[in-house]
Image 1 (cartoon, rainbow, N blue to C red):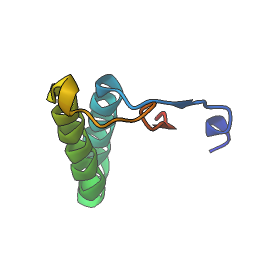
Image 2: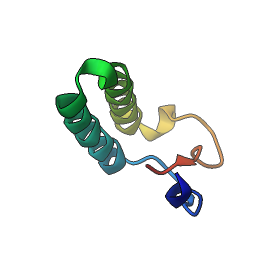
Image 3: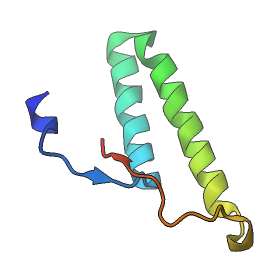
Length: 72
């Protein structure tokens, strides 16, 4: 866990979500279905992310900046 301490906070991107899904699929294959709930959560995040990207600019929420999440 020490290696995470130096990580910067960065925005969530589609590429990061896809990479997280790939890692979770590998973990589920190796260790069984214990990771299925987390995998489903990340898949839902990806779908929500894609829906937000498709929303026209005039319907986008009026915020100064997108919220940041810790990069994984």
